Image 1: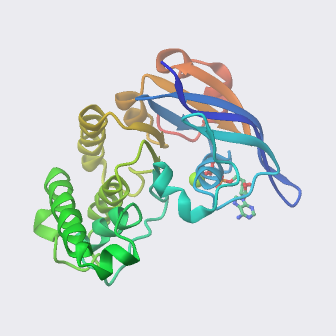
Image 2: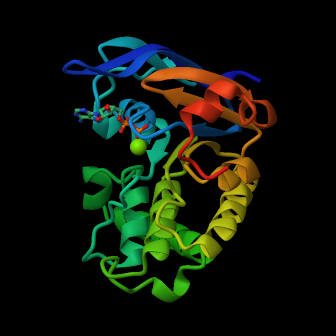
Image 3: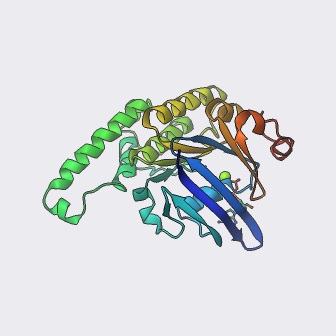
Length: 253
Ligand code: ADP
Ligand code: MG
Protein backbone atom coordinates (compact mmCIF):
# COMPACT_ATOMS: atom_id res chain seq x y z
CA UNK A 1 0.00 0.00 0.00
CA UNK A 2 1.19 3.54 -0.75
CA UNK A 3 2.40 5.75 2.10
CA UNK A 4 -0.19 8.33 3.13
CA UNK A 5 2.30 10.22 5.26
CA UNK A 6 5.96 10.62 4.40
CA UNK A 7 8.20 12.45 6.85
CA UNK A 8 11.69 13.04 5.47
CA UNK A 9 14.73 14.14 7.49
CA UNK A 10 12.58 16.36 9.70
CA UNK A 11 14.58 18.59 12.04
CA UNK A 12 13.20 21.06 14.58
CA UNK A 13 15.32 23.14 16.92
CA UNK A 14 14.16 25.43 19.72
CA UNK A 15 17.21 27.56 20.50
CA UNK A 16 19.87 25.05 21.48
CA UNK A 17 17.42 22.16 21.93
CA UNK A 18 16.93 19.72 19.06
CA UNK A 19 13.30 18.67 19.49
CA UNK A 20 13.48 16.49 16.35
CA UNK A 21 16.64 15.38 14.54
CA UNK A 22 16.55 13.90 11.06
CA UNK A 23 13.28 12.01 11.51
CA UNK A 24 12.22 9.68 8.68
CA UNK A 25 8.81 8.07 8.98
CA UNK A 26 6.35 6.61 6.50
CA UNK A 27 2.80 5.67 7.48
CA UNK A 28 0.63 3.69 5.07
CA UNK A 29 -3.01 4.49 4.36
CA UNK A 30 -5.17 2.81 7.01
CA UNK A 31 -2.38 2.07 9.51
CA UNK A 32 -2.76 2.59 13.26
CA UNK A 33 0.72 3.40 14.58
CA UNK A 34 1.75 3.88 18.21
CA UNK A 35 4.34 6.57 18.94
CA UNK A 36 6.06 6.20 22.30
CA UNK A 37 9.03 7.74 24.09
CA UNK A 38 9.86 9.59 27.29
CA UNK A 39 8.81 13.18 27.98
CA UNK A 40 10.66 15.61 25.76
CA UNK A 41 11.27 12.99 23.03
CA UNK A 42 9.64 15.18 20.36
CA UNK A 43 6.34 13.32 19.90
CA UNK A 44 4.10 16.39 20.25
CA UNK A 45 6.53 18.41 18.14
CA UNK A 46 5.96 15.98 15.25
CA UNK A 47 2.20 16.58 15.57
CA UNK A 48 2.87 20.35 15.81
CA UNK A 49 4.79 20.23 12.52
CA UNK A 50 2.02 18.26 10.82
CA UNK A 51 -0.62 20.72 11.99
CA UNK A 52 1.68 23.66 11.19
CA UNK A 53 1.93 24.99 14.74
CA UNK A 54 5.66 24.59 14.46
CA UNK A 55 8.15 25.44 11.70
CA UNK A 56 10.77 22.77 10.97
CA UNK A 57 14.28 23.99 10.12
CA UNK A 58 14.83 21.10 7.71
CA UNK A 59 13.05 18.22 6.12
CA UNK A 60 9.74 17.59 4.44
CA UNK A 61 6.23 16.38 5.18
CA UNK A 62 4.10 14.86 2.44
CA UNK A 63 0.50 13.76 2.72
CA UNK A 64 -0.86 11.63 -0.11
CA UNK A 65 2.14 12.70 -2.18
CA UNK A 66 1.46 16.41 -1.65
CA UNK A 67 4.08 18.56 0.04
CA UNK A 68 2.51 20.10 3.18
CA UNK A 69 5.68 21.28 4.94
CA UNK A 70 4.95 24.99 4.51
CA UNK A 71 1.17 24.83 4.18
CA UNK A 72 -0.62 27.70 6.02
CA UNK A 73 -2.10 26.35 9.29
CA UNK A 74 -5.70 27.15 8.32
CA UNK A 75 -5.46 24.80 5.32
CA UNK A 76 -4.36 21.77 7.35
CA UNK A 77 -7.88 20.52 8.16
CA UNK A 78 -8.91 20.85 4.53
CA UNK A 79 -6.02 18.56 3.55
CA UNK A 80 -7.39 15.94 5.94
CA UNK A 81 -5.14 16.23 9.00
CA UNK A 82 -6.81 16.45 12.43
CA UNK A 83 -5.46 16.14 15.95
CA UNK A 84 -6.25 16.11 19.61
CA UNK A 85 -4.10 17.83 22.22
CA UNK A 86 -2.19 16.44 25.17
CA UNK A 87 -4.06 18.96 27.34
CA UNK A 88 -7.58 19.11 25.98
CA UNK A 89 -8.39 22.30 24.09
CA UNK A 90 -12.18 22.55 23.81
CA UNK A 91 -14.24 25.75 23.80
CA UNK A 92 -15.47 25.70 27.42
CA UNK A 93 -18.58 27.83 26.95
CA UNK A 94 -19.79 26.02 23.81
CA UNK A 95 -21.89 22.90 24.20
CA UNK A 96 -20.42 19.48 23.49
CA UNK A 97 -22.45 19.34 20.25
CA UNK A 98 -21.20 22.78 19.16
CA UNK A 99 -17.63 21.81 19.95
CA UNK A 100 -17.94 18.72 17.76
CA UNK A 101 -19.49 20.84 15.00
CA UNK A 102 -16.51 23.23 15.04
CA UNK A 103 -14.43 20.28 13.82
CA UNK A 104 -16.69 19.99 10.78
CA UNK A 105 -16.89 23.74 10.14
CA UNK A 106 -13.23 23.96 9.30
CA UNK A 107 -14.00 21.50 6.56
CA UNK A 108 -17.32 23.01 5.49
CA UNK A 109 -17.99 23.95 1.92
CA UNK A 110 -20.37 26.82 2.66
CA UNK A 111 -18.58 30.02 1.66
CA UNK A 112 -19.86 33.56 1.47
CA UNK A 113 -22.02 33.13 -1.65
CA UNK A 114 -23.52 29.88 -0.44
CA UNK A 115 -24.44 31.63 2.81
CA UNK A 116 -25.90 34.59 0.94
CA UNK A 117 -28.03 32.20 -1.11
CA UNK A 118 -29.31 30.45 1.97
CA UNK A 119 -27.44 27.23 1.29
CA UNK A 120 -25.47 27.56 4.54
CA UNK A 121 -28.58 26.51 6.45
CA UNK A 122 -28.53 23.15 4.69
CA UNK A 123 -24.81 22.85 5.39
CA UNK A 124 -25.37 23.65 9.07
CA UNK A 125 -28.06 21.00 9.21
CA UNK A 126 -25.80 18.41 7.59
CA UNK A 127 -23.00 19.19 10.07
CA UNK A 128 -25.41 18.95 13.01
CA UNK A 129 -26.61 15.56 11.83
CA UNK A 130 -23.01 14.35 11.37
CA UNK A 131 -22.15 15.63 14.87
CA UNK A 132 -25.10 13.71 16.34
CA UNK A 133 -23.85 10.48 14.76
CA UNK A 134 -20.44 11.05 16.38
CA UNK A 135 -21.98 11.97 19.76
CA UNK A 136 -23.90 8.72 19.70
CA UNK A 137 -20.82 6.73 18.65
CA UNK A 138 -18.77 8.25 21.49
CA UNK A 139 -21.52 7.78 24.07
CA UNK A 140 -21.82 11.55 24.45
CA UNK A 141 -25.47 12.13 23.52
CA UNK A 142 -26.46 12.77 27.12
CA UNK A 143 -23.87 15.59 27.30
CA UNK A 144 -24.78 17.12 23.91
CA UNK A 145 -26.19 20.38 25.32
CA UNK A 146 -23.79 20.70 28.29
CA UNK A 147 -21.06 23.35 28.11
CA UNK A 148 -17.75 21.56 27.52
CA UNK A 149 -16.17 23.35 30.50
CA UNK A 150 -16.70 21.52 33.76
CA UNK A 151 -17.35 18.08 32.28
CA UNK A 152 -15.50 15.07 33.73
CA UNK A 153 -12.02 14.81 32.21
CA UNK A 154 -12.65 11.42 30.59
CA UNK A 155 -15.68 12.88 28.81
CA UNK A 156 -13.69 15.86 27.47
CA UNK A 157 -11.10 13.45 26.04
CA UNK A 158 -13.86 11.70 24.05
CA UNK A 159 -15.29 15.04 22.88
CA UNK A 160 -11.85 15.99 21.55
CA UNK A 161 -11.61 12.82 19.49
CA UNK A 162 -15.17 13.22 18.19
CA UNK A 163 -14.39 16.83 17.19
CA UNK A 164 -11.21 15.77 15.38
CA UNK A 165 -13.21 13.16 13.44
CA UNK A 166 -15.99 15.60 12.50
CA UNK A 167 -14.00 16.96 9.56
CA UNK A 168 -13.61 13.45 8.12
CA UNK A 169 -9.78 13.42 8.35
CA UNK A 170 -7.52 11.05 6.42
CA UNK A 171 -4.87 11.28 9.14
CA UNK A 172 -5.86 11.49 12.81
CA UNK A 173 -3.19 12.42 15.38
CA UNK A 174 -4.07 11.50 18.96
CA UNK A 175 -1.77 13.05 21.58
CA UNK A 176 -2.02 11.07 24.83
CA UNK A 177 -5.76 10.30 24.59
CA UNK A 178 -5.64 8.12 27.70
CA UNK A 179 -3.64 10.47 29.94
CA UNK A 180 -5.51 11.54 33.04
CA UNK A 181 -8.16 8.84 32.66
CA UNK A 182 -9.10 6.57 35.53
CA UNK A 183 -7.45 3.14 34.99
CA UNK A 184 -10.89 1.60 34.46
CA UNK A 185 -11.61 3.96 31.54
CA UNK A 186 -8.47 3.12 29.55
CA UNK A 187 -9.45 -0.27 27.98
CA UNK A 188 -12.83 1.13 26.88
CA UNK A 189 -11.12 4.04 25.13
CA UNK A 190 -8.73 1.63 23.39
CA UNK A 191 -11.75 -0.40 22.19
CA UNK A 192 -13.48 2.72 20.93
CA UNK A 193 -10.43 3.92 18.97
CA UNK A 194 -9.94 0.44 17.50
CA UNK A 195 -13.57 0.35 16.33
CA UNK A 196 -13.44 3.88 14.86
CA UNK A 197 -10.26 2.96 12.99
CA UNK A 198 -11.93 -0.15 11.61
CA UNK A 199 -15.23 1.53 10.70
CA UNK A 200 -13.82 4.70 9.13
CA UNK A 201 -10.57 3.36 7.74
CA UNK A 202 -8.84 6.51 9.00
CA UNK A 203 -5.05 6.42 9.38
CA UNK A 204 -4.10 7.07 13.02
CA UNK A 205 -0.92 7.91 14.89
CA UNK A 206 -1.42 7.65 18.63
CA UNK A 207 1.02 8.96 21.22
CA UNK A 208 0.63 7.27 24.60
CA UNK A 209 2.50 6.40 27.78
CA UNK A 210 0.14 3.59 28.78
CA UNK A 211 1.89 0.59 27.21
CA UNK A 212 -1.13 -1.68 27.69
CA UNK A 213 -3.14 0.80 25.68
CA UNK A 214 -0.55 1.00 22.87
CA UNK A 215 -0.09 -2.77 22.74
CA UNK A 216 -3.85 -3.34 22.67
CA UNK A 217 -4.22 -1.01 19.70
CA UNK A 218 -1.13 -0.94 17.54
CA UNK A 219 0.64 -3.59 15.52
CA UNK A 220 3.44 -1.15 14.75
CA UNK A 221 5.24 1.00 17.29
CA UNK A 222 7.70 3.84 16.72
CA UNK A 223 9.88 5.09 19.59
CA UNK A 224 11.52 8.50 19.86
CA UNK A 225 14.16 9.50 22.38
CA UNK A 226 15.63 13.02 22.58
CA UNK A 227 14.34 13.89 19.12
CA UNK A 228 15.66 10.76 17.39
CA UNK A 229 13.80 7.71 16.15
CA UNK A 230 15.33 4.78 18.02
CA UNK A 231 12.90 2.02 16.97
CA UNK A 232 10.21 1.38 14.37
CA UNK A 233 8.66 -2.02 13.81
CA UNK A 234 6.22 -4.69 14.95
CA UNK A 235 4.92 -4.05 18.48
CA UNK A 236 6.21 -7.40 19.75
CA UNK A 237 9.83 -6.67 18.82
CA UNK A 238 9.86 -2.96 19.69
CA UNK A 239 8.62 -3.66 23.23
CA UNK A 240 11.54 -6.05 23.74
CA UNK A 241 14.17 -3.77 22.22
CA UNK A 242 16.72 -2.97 24.97
CA UNK A 243 17.14 0.62 23.72
CA UNK A 244 13.38 1.15 23.96
CA UNK A 245 13.14 -0.43 27.41
CA UNK A 246 15.96 1.78 28.65
CA UNK A 247 14.49 4.96 27.06
CA UNK A 248 11.00 4.27 28.41
CA UNK A 249 12.02 3.23 31.95
CA UNK A 250 9.35 5.38 33.55
CA UNK A 251 6.52 3.94 31.48
CA UNK A 252 4.09 1.32 32.75
CA UNK A 253 4.88 -1.86 30.73
P1 ADP B 1 7.08 14.98 23.93
O1 ADP B 1 5.74 15.30 23.34
O2 ADP B 1 7.71 13.77 23.34
O3 ADP B 1 7.05 14.92 25.44
P2 ADP B 1 7.80 17.61 22.93
O4 ADP B 1 7.66 17.45 21.47
O5 ADP B 1 6.72 18.30 23.66
O6 ADP B 1 8.08 16.17 23.58
O7 ADP B 1 9.14 18.37 23.26
C1 ADP B 1 10.40 18.05 22.66
C2 ADP B 1 11.45 19.06 23.13
O8 ADP B 1 11.20 20.31 22.53
C3 ADP B 1 11.44 19.30 24.63
O9 ADP B 1 12.78 19.49 25.03
C4 ADP B 1 10.63 20.55 24.78
O10 ADP B 1 11.00 21.25 25.93
C5 ADP B 1 10.99 21.31 23.51
N1 ADP B 1 9.89 22.17 23.03
C6 ADP B 1 8.71 21.75 22.54
N2 ADP B 1 7.95 22.79 22.15
C7 ADP B 1 8.68 23.90 22.40
C8 ADP B 1 8.48 25.31 22.20
N3 ADP B 1 7.35 25.78 21.67
N4 ADP B 1 9.46 26.15 22.58
C9 ADP B 1 10.63 25.69 23.11
N5 ADP B 1 10.90 24.39 23.30
C10 ADP B 1 9.95 23.51 22.96
MG1 MG C 1 3.92 15.51 24.25
